[in-house]
Amino acid sequence: MSSRGPRLLIWQLGEVAELVPQTPRVSSLVLDVPAWPGHLAGQHVDVRLTADDGYQAQRSYSIASAPEDPHLEITVERLEDGEVSPYLVGEVRKGDKVELRGPIGGYFVWTAGDPRPLLLVAGGSGVVPLMSMIRHREHTGSSNPTRLLYSSRSYEDIIYRDELDRLAAGGDGLTVAHTLTRMQPQGWQGYARRIDADMLSEVGWPKAEMPAVFVCGPTPMVESVASTLVDMGYDPASIKTERFGATGG
Amino acid sequence: MTVTTQQSDLKLDGNAIGGLLREIFTMEMTTAEGTCANCGAVHAVGQVVVYLNAPGAVVRCPSCDHVLMKIVQGRGRYWIDLTGVRVLEFSA
Amino acid sequence: MSFISRGFRGKRRDVASSSRVPPGQHVVDDFPVLSAGPTPRIPVSEWKFVVEGEIDQPRSWTWDEFRKLPAEHVTKDIHCVTKWTKLDTAWTGVSVDTIMEGVETAAEYIMAFSYGGYTTNLPLEDLTGGKAWVAYEFDGQPLHPEHGGPARLLVPHLYFWKSAKWVQGLRLVNEDQPGFWESNGYNMYGDPWREQRYWGD
Image 1 (tube, rainbow over the protein chains, first blue to last red):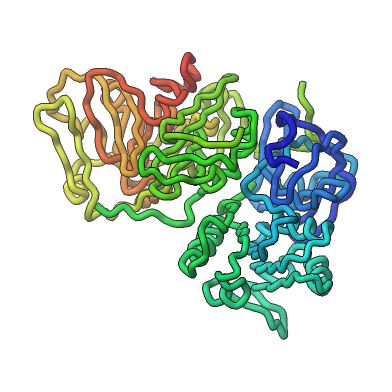
Image 2: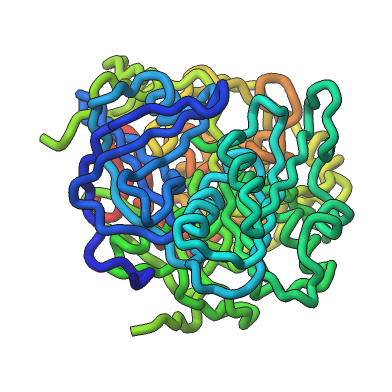
């Protein structure tokens, strides 16, 4: 499927088929979108909300589901003084309709068939588009060695925690390394600090392997990781980034 | 004159205006490559710096911060300044 | 009528018809930060404010010199073209009348320019007669860089994009030339009471 998308971008309605809480602040919305044209792993949708006085607010959300999944899933973090996210995580009910358009984005995409080893680096809700890539990889039976380095505030904040454990235990070349930056549970064996060069050296591929790299999360984290990788000698052209900004909505 | 800027400014990248550019150009633009009219650096639109917390979208060169594009929407119209992009390359 | 999202209200919007709220605006309690680029960080030791252009003798002040000028405390309502209005904002700054005192010029327009490259144009008469300040304190505190500190232009009777953050100087010019936003769809004048947001308004 061409990443350009087969036709003009139009606003369409998706119906909430299921709401899946992921963490105290994060939920997935599983949507039935009848006219969905398909998508690539890493793309996003724009969601538009309209109040009855005509006021509108719009935000972008990465698609969490794989292209092969029957429903469209987006995963939303509820931000305390947000405008759209408290509606999507809190007000929305099964059966409600949500207006969206997509898929959008051809730059931050990964397709199975790319033979390179894959390094995925996620900060917080930045894991969402990378999860689409991981799920796509699983559906297509890809075996290219893949490593996810995932930074969360605490164990309770790890999105898709059980699914990632299950996939990593699957023995098909996916490894997951977590770092918890604010709080760690008793007996925590994983990393407990912000992502730095040492962690990237330990978790990532040696630059000689020339991996494809995708980094997604808050702007400061993405910029720090990308520039660290470049300083470590990775080819800048192999590093794709998506910034979620310091605030969302 | 030293003007230092803080890393964690409210900035996004070209992915955040993927939908808006698709509205305007009627095709996917985040993979398009733009040459900065100021410094000559070539960047995919997905990589350029975007400020959306403004009266319009301001797109800047990741290498030199020069304004590549300004996009304003209002009263049913778009105003687009592309003078910061010397040339935009994308596949037909 | 387009689709309505059940139960969506959005941020509390007081579209109260008050004589203090221009058409199309709503009142906010916070102070939104809008930004068209990286926030300049200018140490006051390097800060300078200038008046130049169609003027016999350009003027400039260092920070220390500027802080010695007579300052005023003013409380004003401000209106952003992105539709928020904030009432009773308290500023401390030097009136543009003070800055322009004794300036002889035939120029009728000003281009305000800022550290970081931002520009905005205004008629000179909209900056004088007690209508504008170069402000360096907000709410009794030094103006934060994200709100335009060390100093910003303050022109409350026009949309707030005219109140240039990180202002560096005023250039006196004979013709009204569009600044950063005015050249890209925004109104040359920007009167919120006549809702002059865009070209042709």
